[in-house]
Image (cartoon, rainbow over all chains, first blue to last red; front, side, top):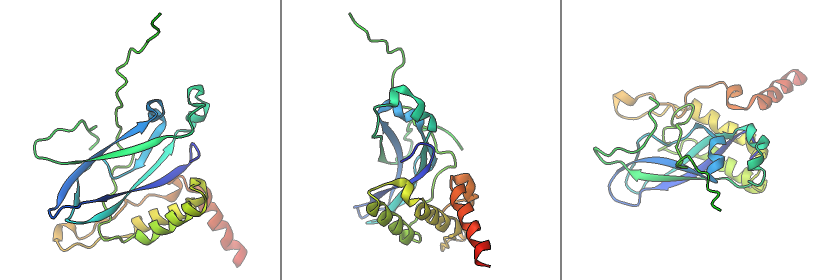
Amino acid sequence: VVPGETALAFYKAKNPTDKPIIGISTYNVVPFEAGQYFNKIQCFCFEEQRLNPQEEVDMPVFFYIDPEFAEDPKMAKVDLITLSYTFFEAKEGQNLPLPGYH
Amino acid sequence: MSTAMNFSSKSFTPRPPDKGAFPLDHFGECSAFKERFMECLRQSGYESAACRQSAMAYLECRMDRRCFLLFPSFLLRQLMANEPLEKLGFKDLINEKSEEKPEKS
C-alpha cells in the first residue's frame, strides 16, 4: 500500500450459530504509533451489523495511509502495519467505548 | 537510569470512518467484483496500487446497487452512498477513462 493512495481490504465474518447475531466491531492498529496515520474512509465497524444463522459475509474496509507517514522519521523502519478487527456480540445495555459520530 | 518518558497512557483510541459504515452485502450482490479484486491482488503479489481499477469497480458496484428487501421501510437501500470517484482517490483512473473516449471517435 502506498501512503496517500486509497486502498481496499476485505475481512470475512461468519455466524456459526443457529441464531441471528447482532454484532459490533472495533479495530486496532499495530504498531501503535502508526495508528495516527491510518485513516478509514468507510468500513463496517462501529455500527451494529446483523448476521443471520450460518451467514458468512465479506466486510470491506476502504482506507488510506496519511502521506505524512512517509515523512515521519519514527516510521522509517515500519514496513508492516496490521489492522485487526474484533467483533463483539451486541448486548442490550452494553456500552462499548465507541466514538460517537452520528 | 530510567528513561521512561511516557506521559500519555498509550491506549489506542479508535476513530470512526470518514464516510460512515458500509451496510453488509447480505445477498453478495458485489461478490463477483470482490473476487475479481482479490484475484488481482493474488496475481500482483498483493500490491494494492496494481489493483485500484478493480477496487474502483467494486465500489461502483456498491453505489449502483439497490438492495430490495421485503419490508416496506427498507425498500431502497444502497450498499454505499453515491460519491464522486474522484473524491475517493480514483481521480487519475477517471481521467484515463475519459481520455480513451475522444481517441475512439
